Image 1 (cartoon, rainbow, N blue to C red):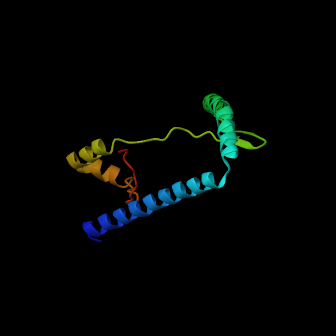
Image 2 (image 1 turned 90 degrees about the vertical axis):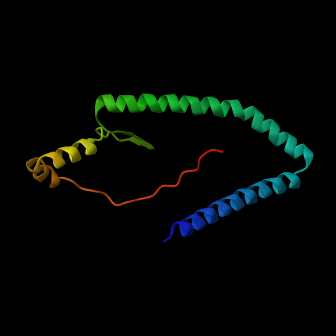
Image 3 (image 1 turned 30 degrees about the vertical axis):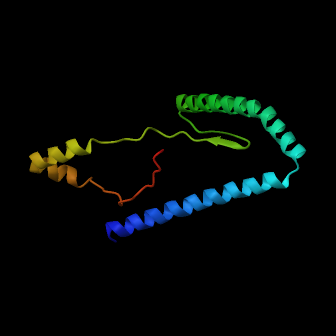
Length: 132
């Protein structure tokens, strides 16, 4: 596929994404218009009343999550309770690929010893959306 074809697909993706956002905006507008003024006002009051409570609960959850993770890592064991499981995973091992490639290029014996352990994963792509 040509670069221009990929760019065309990407532009189409962004168009559909914008259309989806526009549809959601229109839907919310129609919902607001369908409600009588007193109902909209009461909904706003409820949103305001619960906004602080929700933020406080989210902050508490984030703090508890960090404490739980730290405790599980310290215990080096999985933990489960009714409705929740926390899994312990050892740290990922990584290697200095650039350094190993240089070592392989400088010594044929090193290259022969290391090459058998080299595995390369499948190529992949990831979408990101920079903030404007």
